[in-house]
Image (tube, rainbow, N blue to C red; front, side, top):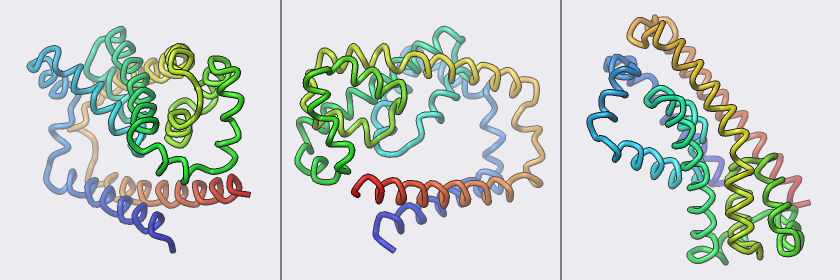
Length: 225
């Protein structure tokens, strides 16, 4: 087992432990959307800034963007939730782009699969179209994020294509989040039967993490070939 897989297993175990702690400590009672909304409203505009900053900086390192996309409608109005999700999603692209291009270019380039690096020439000659299609298909997949940063694509077409390319999926996910927020308001988190469901949540986290590791390793092996 390589070091990367071991770290993912450790992360899954920690995440499962966190779910168990949320139940055992009673912290789930604080996860109610009304409590979250009150906290963010109390901090004013800084709540949105904190949300966008956390989304932009954490997603490129493996934190699933759905965590943010589905959380925003629990806190803000539908319009504000979409705009903050859109800003955060574009922010992840900008953060990855600048870190990859100006901070860790050589280190990242050495670790990208050859299949990803083959897009480089296409990105140089047809930057906007290629980035736009990549965003529509892969959205903010971290590998693609870093690859765009070390590629030869110019910044202007990269930014324009990212802003437009991520909009459809961001809108769709925000709409789903609005439905989820409405359902949670009708069924508050504190009323859920946690003593019955928390073991299944722990198992689900471990299973999903294991499947993700398997798929990622298989995809990387195919990309290297």
